[in-house]
Length: 243
Image 1 (tube, helix red, strand yellow):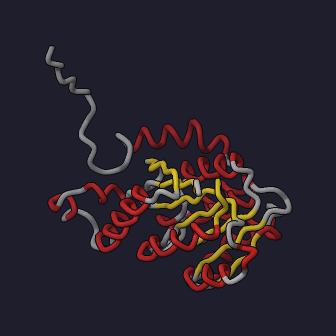
Image 2 (tube, helix red, strand yellow):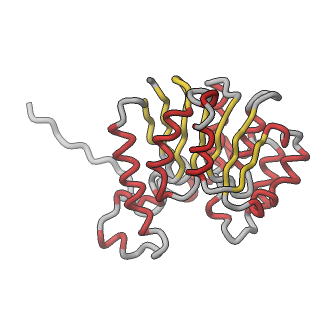
């Protein structure tokens, strides 16, 4: 018997990764904000007035990251791209008192915006901040044999051009069973847009679209990892190193 095609009564998705802004707000107000630690809320609200506030980690993505950190009992982590420190603070609050985060960013000024809140939360001692481009900083980590295969978790939210290069280095730094999370892997939905739709997008977004597409193909084909491409925030891809 020929199966009939069932058309679901959902509107066509165009902008945003959920069906509506109201639905996203419902998730935030019902499940995310009530569980958000007070220092995170304070830092999120402080960052909202920053000219580049759009690049801050989405709080729903942060909530998922916190669970992942706890699930793997993360103690030694890497963060590539810090900005004002929302995801950095979230990680510091999630790992043990003797845990350590190697935090890498090209701007100490942005990091210092959130530093007073990090200090007030009592977790600054867990953070080793390096003002640097990420590739040389990662290469320096790899020069020490004790770092190879020793990290439990990594979060990447820096220049999209180098995501694939970061991946190769992180596969050496992460232990088997460790997790790396890549942010912005749906890039505002543009990864699936056709030419007419792309013409409506801001010009700054388009050059990085191809790098995200390249990364997504790389991750999907990498046998060293188990992946979940998850539509929270601007899209995150969770990768678990399996060998």
